[in-house]
Image (tube, rainbow, N blue to C red; front, side):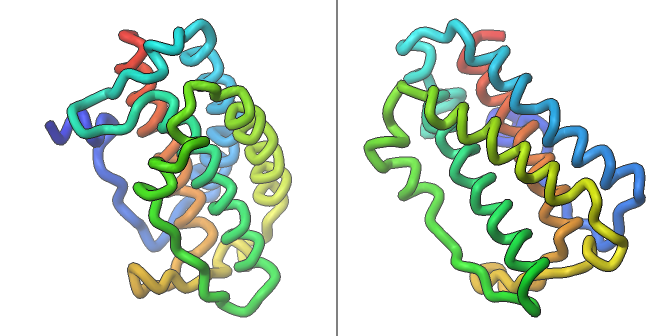
Length: 172
């Protein structure tokens, strides 16, 4: 069951990332929206309502979730760059996944958001200085400070994690 829930393994925070790893995250944000489009293009409404595991989200919910969570990533990173260790606003991703728009098999708007927000993420991250990668925000739920480089690593993993879920739903 854990392989279905975490098909690329669980994410592990690191304190440090190499310059090559940071460039790799930026590369991921550049190419992964296209990978998602390849997987979801041609998926029928039935495929989009299919779950990758018992109790898991449907393919459509996964797409909507990626759009929503990556918008939050962008906003959190931008806050960390423009404020002194801001306290971010947590949200319940499970409750968001149950909202009417997140349950819809109509994923085009979320695919547009993913494409656009990833362009913004790349624009934001590609020219960060070493000091800017170190900037952080405080997450009140996890009670920890999270650096921009750590959240970039997390969301690079996050996208790959959900691409695998979509492949399962598509039967690929």
